[in-house]
Length: 132
Length: 507
Image 1 (cartoon, rainbow over the protein chains, first blue to last red):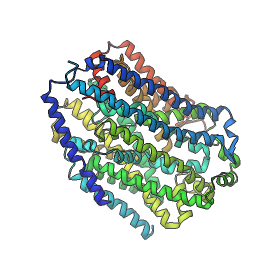
Image 2: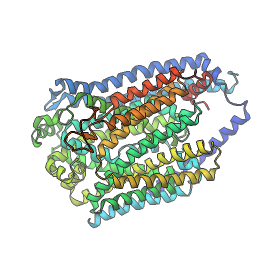
Image 3: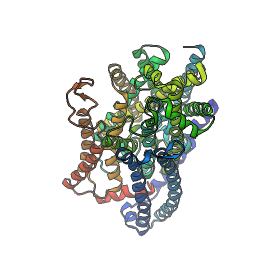
């Protein structure tokens, strides 16, 4: 444990160096990126559109499925019926929300990795001076 | 207190102090102090987030709530977990991309104005203070019970420990205290759960069947409605739980300890798995306590049910397991309060002193001194408040902190990232409306008012809900919207910059 701790605490050092290097890279280049030009570019707009098309419906879905539970338990008794043995549907619903959380978590990571690749293309173009 | 128990305590205190000692050698810049230099890996930060999140209220509170109220206690577990989807889908990555040390950094990345930073810092400090008093009061009561020492000694003990971690080790030490605590907590919880399952012959169906008859509530124990009978209040509480996490300063701060948005993302995934498994296991903790300790014994030890988990440990594994679980509970409290001190100190030293008073021109040395002084100040102030708040209801303070986080912080975070026309006036009104409405509605609620004199004030509560999130969260959003309509037009170029940074992390 102690050794692990020490090693892990030390891992930041190379990262700091990397940071310092990238900073000096920026200062060598032609100033800060032209954010307005990037924001107006088709590839950025497309990426944003894809992102919101992914995030918005899922967010609405999980918030609704979540809040439906207290609504159902407060105003109906349908979840009190047993699903398996003496386990009522309310426990099944609750567990389904757990599974939903884990699944959506993994779904997010998978999609976000795709978005990373598209962002990478914009990075490259910016570096090449396409947005000046 | 037996020898083995003492050994567990000394071991945990020793280990955390050792980590603090190692971390202290490196903590010599503001960036190291607040964010461990942004150098934590995904899994380290993920476990630390879980460590920050699984507070004494989660571990002891939920176990007790399920033991006493059955399914109604489990509502907390569900809300606290699903909240991570809000964090992951909406907040984590843009926050990492825009902020530096604090929430105010992120909002002022778009609206660089002192009054906005001040408002964000004040809402952060308010949340931290409520949360901290809750943790310290709970800690004091618990350690008093566990170790048989006076309440004030217990609060002072926890207070001094948390100050040591933060003062010398900054974020690196705090993170490692959280990691150690999370690992110990998971070990303890898994162990107790296996023992409980063993008692039921690893038959979950049989466990549920038996739970129908072991409590005074009978079959109702397994159905919602034992504790929460007011539908709107239940829904309101659930809103505060799911939306509050994404506005809690000490959780948000954890996203600045990693190098980029991708790592922030992976840390949320680790945290979600750990926290989720933990919350599933709270069922076994709660059921086990109800079955093998009994609600009478639980209530006799502590009316709020906070002693359910330690008592269950004693019933299952005798004094050794009880000592271990108590030591874990102690570590849990230490880790959470250390994280809170750090986020309070950052709002004070970085936002109010460094950026507003010193206009961002403080030297590295001045920043460090301010950070350390603020840590001592935040610690001392909350210890004093906690000493005076012994009789306060802890669960109420925690849910209030979640409610303020959801009402004052979440609307402004979402608008700043996603709304093109959002402007300075809107940012200010969003924070103020959310903060004030949450505080005022709670002040008028049944938490403080009862006609029979059982609460702080005698009289009818003017506001019927114990948790005001149902009203105050929409008010926060509405406040930001109206402020935006009234205020000057948004700077579109600035939004382009925020939009690009938030979405792809280009600096």
